[in-house]
Each structure stands twice: as C-alpha cells, then as structure tokens.
Image 1 (cartoon, rainbow, N blue to C red):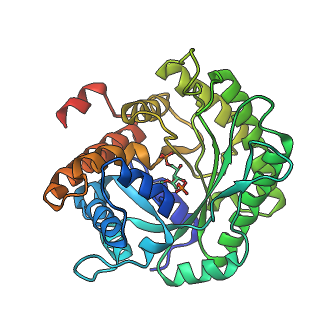
Image 2: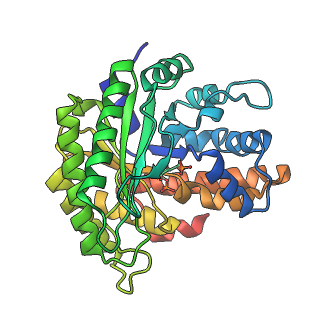
Image 3: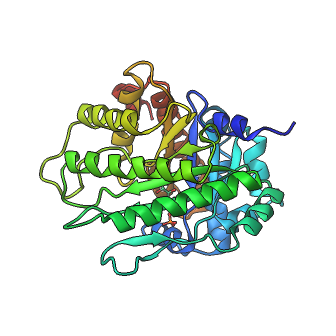
Length: 339
Ligand code: 5MM
C-alpha cells in the first residue's frame, strides 16, 4: 500500500523510534574509516553498512528510517539483496541525502552555502524509482566572531525551503536540517540566540515556498555550549533551553523533530533526548537522527574486520535501543551498563 507523505513523515518520527544517519559522503566516510585504520572502498563501505542494516532487532524496534548516500542506495549486499530492501524488510524506511555538500559563500568569509538544487527534480524522480521514501538536505551555520551573518542564514534557509518544495512535489518527505555547529567557543545562550534566528527564518522560507508542514521532519541541532567554551551547560539546561527555543519557533503542525548529534558524546546525545521527552507533553514527537552518536561504538567494535561483525552489530543495537528509550522518555543512566 502506498503511504501518503503525511504517513511517511509520521512513521519517521513514530514514538520510540528514530532515524539512522548513514549518509556520510565519500570524504566523511573515509575520515571515519581512517580512524579505524580501514581502507574506504566500495566493498568496505558496503560491508560496514550491511552490518548495521542487518542488525534486525535494532532496526525493527528502534530505527524508523535510514538516510543513505547515493552510492549506498544503489548497492547490493553480499548475497545480492539491495541494501534498501534489507532496510524496508526490517520495517524501516530508506531515505537519501540529496544535497551536494557545502561551498564557501560569496563575500561571506568563514561561512558556507549548501549546494545541490541543480537538476534536483530529476534526481528526486530517480530516487523515488529506486525506493527512497524521504530525503535530507543539511545547511551549516557556524558561530564565531561576527558570524553568522544575515546573508548566510537567508541563503541557506531559502535553499532548504526550495529543496523541501522540490522533494514534496516529487513525492519525497524532506528532512529539513539547519545545523548550527557546536564547534565554537560560544556559550549555550549564544547557541540559543542563533538557533532561534535560524529556525525563525527557515519556517518563514518554508511558508513562502508553499511547503506543507505536516509533510516534513525537522532535523535541528540541540541548544548546547560550544565545544571550546569553558562554560559547559548541564544536561538539564541543554534540554530546557532546546525545548524553549523549539516552542518559540517550530509550528505544532510539524509532526516531529529528529535531532542531529553534532559531535556530542554518545551518552550525552541520549541523555539530552531523554530529558526533553521526560518533560511531558510537547506539540511534536522528539526523536533522534544521529550519525556519529549511533555509529561511533559500532565502527570501533567492527574496526574493518569481518570477524568483528557480530560485535559491531551488538554495539549498534545497544545505542539504537538506548536512543529508542530516550525517544520515549524511558532511558536511565543505569541501562548503559547493561551493554
Ligand atoms: C552522517 O553524516 C551526515 C553527512 O555528512 P557529510 O555530508 O558531511 O558527509 C550528516 O549530515 C549527518 O546526517 C548529520 O550531521 C547528523 O549526524 P551527527 O553525526 O551530527 O549526528
């Protein structure tokens, strides 16, 4: 049975389930593989991702969708099954990253614009034929001296909204991802200020581009201290300030918000999500769309060796379960030890 766009969006943020971001582009996955001294080849990337997608209980119970890179959507498992089919057989939805990455933004030193709108309608058509149900586009906003600029926020919000409209017209649910980086030395209040500004502008552009909010999933950063800030906010403060900013900016018509982890430790990313969900009723479902915070332990346990596949799958299953519980507000620190 074909699902409507609303149904797909709701399934992506279904209670207690979240999204696995496995859409590392060739450069990013190479960096990840370098860290475990493994060569990044089409086969090693396939083996690693196949290990994650075949972690059946985790996929069935906690992973509502998987964001893939172009190469992965076209790849087949060792036994010839398309990787996208392994995902859908586990009751999860395959999605596709459609942005083409960032480039320096003209006349805006230190700032970037995400590219990829050229021929996007044609690419969306092809991805739908290949089985994708949703798409992702990530805009990147950095905080620093004199940045972000109005120019950068405007250009990125507009591109995000154009992407979202193109996807909806072509039959894919767009994940709208404006990421305010946590790399700087700023404190949590500066992050709150910039995140509020960015989200306000993104929703304004979505409106002007006639995007139906019931058919999207928002993927924002949490409101958090910059990694280099001497003043690190507590987990409770992160949860409280994130929800405050979201309430000010995200209309209740949006079915769900799936956070990126952005460089947080695995357990912090889980704890923050749990604390927000434990606050009680919110206008949207709050869940995860983590890359690093879902994969780091699995990548290390696997380390590129076929004999470690069971250990890698187990590490992934543990993080998927912890985050699934956090998405339901049912996580507890003590459960981490049971790994
Ligand atoms: C998995 O990483 C994604 C792709 O990154 P590149 O295009 O730079 O290779 C990234 O967009 C990811 O989906 C989000 O940032 C969430 O991942 P994290 O690690 O922040 O949870």
